Structure formats: C-alpha cells, structure tokens
Length: 285
Ligand SMILES: Cc1cc2nc3c(=O)[nH]c(=O)nc-3n(C[C@H](O)[C@H](O)[C@H](O)COP(=O)(O)OP(=O)(O)OC[C@H]3O[C@@H](n4cnc5c(N)ncnc54)[C@H](O)[C@@H]3O)c2cc1C
Image 1: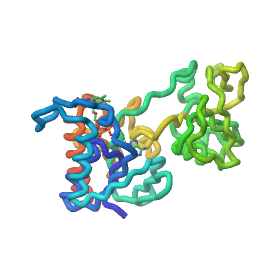
Image 2 (image 1 turned 180 degrees about the vertical axis):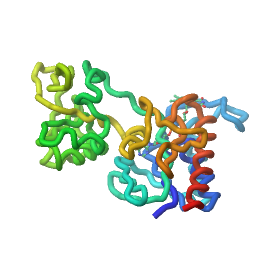
Image 3 (image 1 turned 90 degrees about the horizontal axis):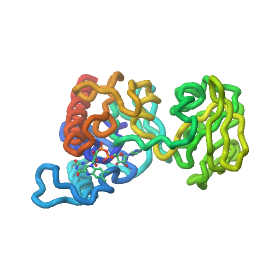
Image 4 (image 1 turned 60 degrees about the vertical axis):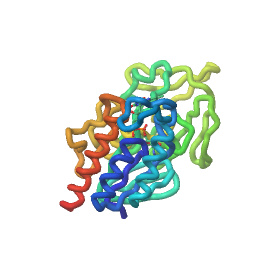
C-alpha cells in the first residue's frame, strides 16, 4: 500500500515524486518509457543548463535524483484504475493500491484517422470499456487496438457482451489473446451506421456487424484513466483546478495531460504542486 502512486515518469511525474517523497509519503512511480523527452534531442529553454541538453539525459537524471531520495520506480504499463476505499492501479502484470494518485502520462496519443469514427463517438464509439460496457450487454462489440491496453478493455467487455472482437487494423497482436476474444487483423476503412454505429467496413470490402467499438490504440492515456474513475475531462485533457486537483478527492493530474503549454517548465511546476497537494491530502487522512 502506497500513500501516492504517480502514473508517468516524465518531468511532471518525477517532479511530483520529488515533492511527495521529500514530504514523507511512501511514493511509487510507474512509467512505461521516457515519454516525450525521448524524442527531444536538444533542449535549451529549460532553466539551469548552460549548454543544450538531450531530452533522454534530462529525464534519466531526474529518475536518478528520485531514486536517491527513496522513490520506488517501476517500468510497466498501467492498463486500468479503479476506486474501492483506496485507488487500485492495474499494470499488465500487477495490482498496486494507494490513498492518492497523480496522473502524469503526458499528452494523449492521437485517435486513428478512420472515416466515420468521430461521427459515432458516444453513439457506438467509446473510449472506456469499464464506463460503457453495460450499454452493450448482449451485443456484438469490438476493441480497436493490439496491445496490453486493448486486451484489458476486451476483457472488461467479455462478461457482458455477446461477442468481443479485437480489431488490430492491419497489425499483429502484441500480446497473447485468449480464445474467448476473436481477432480480426484486416485494415479498417470506415465506421458505418445511420443514427448509431451498426458495422465496420474493411479495406478488402468486407463488413462486420458491430453495435460498439471501444478505442484502445497504444497505451492508456491519463484521460482514459481519469474517465475510468469518473473524473472530469475535456476532450483529451483532464480538468483540474489551480492546485492540480481533479473533481475526485485524492486524484491529481499534472503536465501535458492537463493541456495548456506543453513544455517541461510547466510540467515540472504542475508536478511539484500535485506532489505538495498529495502531501496535504495524506496528512488529512
Ligand atoms: C520532439 C519534442 C521536442 C520537445 N522539445 C522541448 C523543449 O525544447 N523544451 C520544452 O520545454 N519542452 C519540449 N518538449 C515538450 C516536453 O517534452 C513535454 O512538455 C514534457 O515532457 C511533458 O512532461 P510530462 O511529464 O507531462 O509528459 P511526458 O514527458 O510525455 O511523460 C509521460 C510519461 O508517462 C508514461 N506513460 C504514459 N502512459 C502510461 C501508461 N499507461 N502506463 C505507464 N506509464 C505511462 C510515459 O512512459 C512517460 O514516462 C518537446 C517534445 C517533443 C515531442
């Protein structure tokens, strides 16, 4: 049991961890990779470096700093989150619990550009199996994706849906798919329906009848995780106040996932604020 679990080990997550840990909280950071900074090969607008610094070097230094202070860091992908007296965080191989959570997974991956997808959002296209599975009980549904997150969403649908298909859109599944879930690897062309979604069309001109398709491409972003908990989002951004609080007690968000200026300085500030607020929250509980 941790006081705080931070999802994301970019500048926002690590900055939050530095404050939380130095404030006496038992702190766990779960990160999948080095995030946006791994793509930045020259940073020269962040305070304290005379010469340009490579993004990955900056993040690795932050991680070493957090470890030195006693933060527990693990490399894993968070696929689910729920609340039952405490926050429960599910990775692809473990469960962790904490009194509070800071979401800091960076900006959300883009939604695939497939004809008709946005037309049916909320009318057959969903981004959260745990939130919407009930509406599709007894129906044929699919999950669009090919990794751990897609498998997690498909498994959440299995108890209620008539059938669950994984649509990989031309890719090979990156994880082992149980026999209870069908796999369709064909490339998608379009989503069809009149008022609501009723089928998907593939590039080979075939169609599959479906009442719902759950989008789970890539990894779960902060907004996906926030939505699973019932936290307020606006588009792909998490809605927070000036203290990085979401509308749920003990749940904070920081960095690119809250929108605004997508820069290291802002991520570090929001992480620090979220860490500090988590300390206050834990002290009250
Ligand atoms: C090419 C490029 C150049 C840039 N150059 C600059 C620059 O010069 N100056 C500047 O200020 N900013 C720059 N930026 C922006 C900067 O990188 C971001 O604003 C900053 O990294 C945001 O920090 P973050 O912690 O919010 O998100 P990120 O750094 O993206 O970190 C997100 C973290 O969440 C983890 N994660 C995501 N999903 C999951 C999951 N489901 N489970 C577990 N972990 C997960 C990732 O592994 C990662 O560790 C650049 C960005 C890019 C792409």
